[in-house]
Length: 205
Length: 205
DNA sequence: AAGCGTGGCTAATAGCATTAGCTTGATGGC
DNA sequence: GCCATCAAGCTAATGCTATTAGCCACGCTT
Image 1 (tube, rainbow over the protein chains, first blue to last red):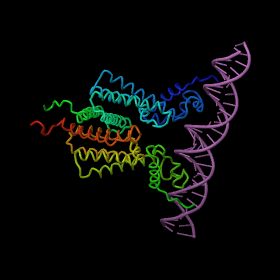
Image 2: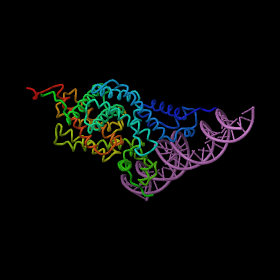
Image 3: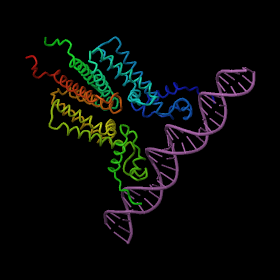
Image 4: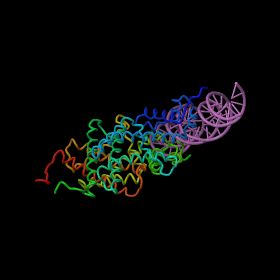
């Protein structure tokens, strides 16, 4: 009969452990019953702290998204241009490999209308803003920045998603392939910047 | 008491309808109960035709993967080099947008060891082989082809995955962003080919 | 016509989320 | 220091899911 002393944050923390323990499918395997068991509490008791299983998943997604943004920001501080973009891509992939379950949660898109997803949308905007800031050093024209951000997100996310799901054969040489992708992203963003407004073509004076 | 006249293929066909009706989350929402209802049959009867829900999902994934490969092959026939790569990317995205639920099924990776996933693995190999064939026209060195295939898969898949999950704001201008991605992929594969073995540098004789 | 395999059924089990309503612990005000 | 209140836990119940076991009858084959 002693109180378990739970709280919203404590429940989320236990859910994160669950997700981490489950590998890439940890989010899909997340269950209120298991969280309750790990808390030493009956399942319905969790509803005193969290609205539903879906809400708990959203909490996990929010934490993961913030962690990814923070790690990416830390990796790119003090860098600019290609250097920053490479660091961003590396940090992104490192986070996904270190926390596959949480990374899967990042993929959960917030509802564009639901008011309870406002915080989630803000976290997503922070991530997009970070990528935008990293790309700012390339001198992209304003109307092309959005394209560059999308291309970078697509490339990096596509690679780590395929890597985590086992979509690639032969685990070896994955680093080399990722380097090729990052090289391509750097070159692609550079030409995207130069194509619209060539500031000082040094190649052929 | 009249027989429903089901078969493995009929069950899979009904499952595909279910998946199609559910949008991007159609695969996750696929349920034996709903398939049985649409077949006018009790749920356990389905087990006479399919091993489990997971097996049915694998069947759906197999169909989707084959369809995607076929559509991509049809789009690239008679084309080569950048032309073929652009057509491949476009066909890929078109399929994903026309069949979001089925495309989600494509992401299901087959177990590398399970014997019942052999057909699924073969279908994946066919898809990878097709991408490899498309990239062959770029004259890539053998040890770089795998990198190029991975980069292309990552880029295209990442884009359509983010697009389908609503990861991008503003539906407008998505075509332009996708064009930027494809341009980047073409340029990236080209430089990957030229970097290792510059056959006939015409730029500076 | 008889037989048999197969495709359907019902019944039962177990796991899940979720809601309703109760009880008791801890904590606030007097 | 005691009482009232609120919150955090509980049990019970509902309804959904997949899955297994065992039964029965249809329809084809002989």
